[in-house]
Image 1 (cartoon, rainbow, N blue to C red):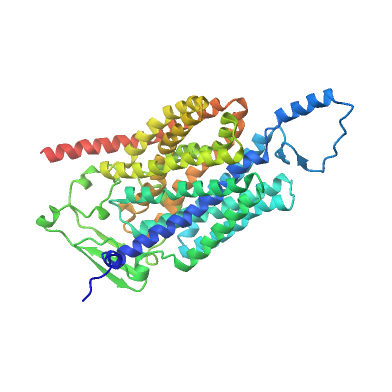
Image 2: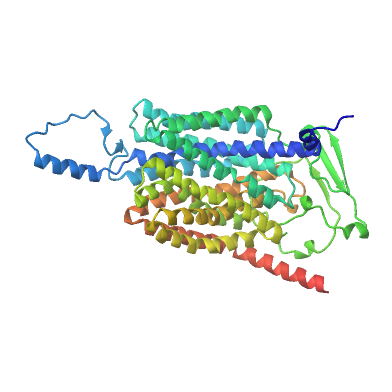
Amino acid sequence: MAQLPPGIRFITSFSRDQWYRAFIFSLTFFLYASFHLSRKPISIVKGELHKHCAGSHEVELSSYKENAAQIQPIKKTSNVSQCGWEPFDKNNYKQLLGALDYSFLCAYAVGMYLSGIIGERLPIRYYLTVGMLASGLFTAMFGLGYFYNIHNLWFYIMSQIANGLVQTTGWPSVVTCIGNWFGKGRRGLIMGVWNSHTSVGNILGSLIAAYWVSTCWGLSFVMPGVIIAVMGIVCFLFLIEHPKDISCSCTPSSSSKTFLNGASRFRVQTTLSAKETSKPQDPEMQHLLLDSGNCNMLLKSSTVVTGESRHGTSAISFLGALRIPGVIEFSLCLLFAKLVSYTFLFWLPLYITNVEHLDAKRAGDLSTLFDVGGIFGGILAGLISDRLEKRASTCGMMLLLAAPTLYMFSAVSKMGLEATVVMLLISGALVNGPYALITTAVSADLGTHKSLKGNARALSTVTAIIDGTGSVGAALGPLLAGLISPSGWNNVFYMLMVADACALLFLLRLIQKELRCHTDHTLFKEH
């Protein structure tokens, strides 16, 4: 018999379950990357909607005074301005652009609280598909304003509001799906890698939008809208919500038995013998978040009986989700962490344009370095939190480093392009690291907390509460940046540093609990 080719040997070295998990990992990665891809154009196009034309006006005025007799008046067509696209060509352009950001993010924040509750009562595949198709429509609608010469501010605001609402279908859906397929032990690293879809989407969105921004900025919105709509069709055709939908058992323990009965699955874990308890637990099945006030749960072996069924358990209430230990603290922390991240997302290209005096395309390309740093930050945060088994402490450490880094960024970025590149990478890692960890691994951990007694339907609601609270900060950040930036960009950075300090403040109780539990665990092993 001939030896199998190396490629076939590689394929067959993985089990059916592993291939399905890799497929779902990749599919949800690209699905949510398309969401961020469609959000990025507005930050790139800002430099085109309002152009800095003061210098050109002064040149024209000087030329007019010197050659008044030779210059003929030029008749401009209505709604055309050398300073950009009406109505954003006026001196209050920062407030108007801030209103566009605020309308999207405020709608997103309000819609997120409802999205999780609705999402856990509907099939994820259908819910996510409809949301992606609608998001494609409203993203493209903003760009159609260019082709149809629309200069009504409310047209663009309503496009942003509608898009913000439908984009809330994305996050609870993909986090619930990925949480169903992966266990807890290596969840920080796995989701740290997976959450790089945020930065990948931002980078692709920046490059796509920047390609057309100077020639036809309408396509900077239309093309991302088409892409997310196409990905919505891919979602409908291929997304598998839960391993049991294809009789796949992805994270069983060696001592458990799984019974499949139609749509319901129940796992009964028998009591382990002394010999078995001495063996290390499967990392996929370990619990990393601490139960409220009880560190001893980490030190003892216990019998666990869980029942997992999307149809056999009732959906958790909003107040019930808030009572899960850690949900409120992490939600408030994310509010301020996301405020910082989204201020960079929506205002960084314009800041680079003003400080480095680059055109909209080059500023958009340079801003992608912040997201490149965010990729490494998310992976690093997940890796550290898995190793230390301390989610809150990992977030706190990165937040503590982020505040002085932002101050350095505001000072160093004025020294030249090379310094800006370095600080963009470092700031991106420290700002996006805690944000990535809380919205992925922490949300999934809390959504499958022991206090839920196996209710797998709570994950969508918990995710929506955490990200919805964070989205309030995401709405406030760009709005405050638009209001503060006229007084100087330094004041914007001071605001971001205060936000980082507030995010750290809300985690102090959880950090103290983790450190106390670590001390108790060390003393227990010594005795």
